[in-house]
Length: 326
Ligand code: PBG
Image (tube, rainbow, N blue to C red):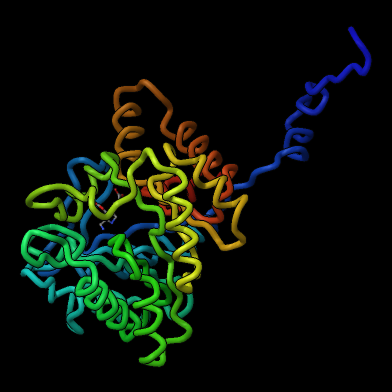
């Protein structure tokens, strides 16, 4: 053997030695748990394409948040499914809307025990299923950011800690920051879906949240998955507009962008491990082709290793459980 005789196996010799050498950690405190709440629902509905994920009626929300908080998961991401949709998506900013009600109920029951994050978008609320408002045959940017700002303010009024715009409209972070500040919500933070890609990995979510576009696709607003520099421009723009946390979405096929964001910027980074990533693991695990726990662990650690500070994941509860047991 040539000199120096580098033997990396020395540091893998025992479980304790491996613990000492471990570079990346994963804790329940890194996780954000998505929660779907549906208006006028009597009892929980299973999401067909996402095994073990359910839409909840308002009445079940306290139980669910209790479970999440007992697992030491510090945050939830709320998505609403309204009873009515219209062209302008008006139920999205209704003071008595389903998300607003859920937020104030959670705040009243849990105080500061959980960080309440709420999705700010229009696709669940518009008849078109698009993330913005349609004028003619176009998704109109500037009227859409106006409505997104109203949604954010309504969430803040209900008691949200963080609003999370996912519509990919230009200027959405600036417009929301301005609206929040004008209403006195200077303490409400913004976690933007900064580099949200046009992705087939979202299909199961559209089933969960009833938000598939009725015509066309999201190519005129979401980032093409071929463009890394463009994704960095989105991140940089959001930082310049006053974002608090940036997000890369999806996660697994976009680890390069998470690490590039980590290298270039000092802002906290969230990664969204989306519905399709979840469904692929669940599907294969159901067949007995992979171990769900082992694969989940490896995926979540990889996302952390790439540079994410926090992960929005449908595995939040199951991962928090196995992390506590290990
Ligand atoms: C809607 C929205 C989507 C997701 C989060 N917010 C779907 C989409 O853009 O079509 C996807 C999340 C997931 O797949 O888990 N603005």
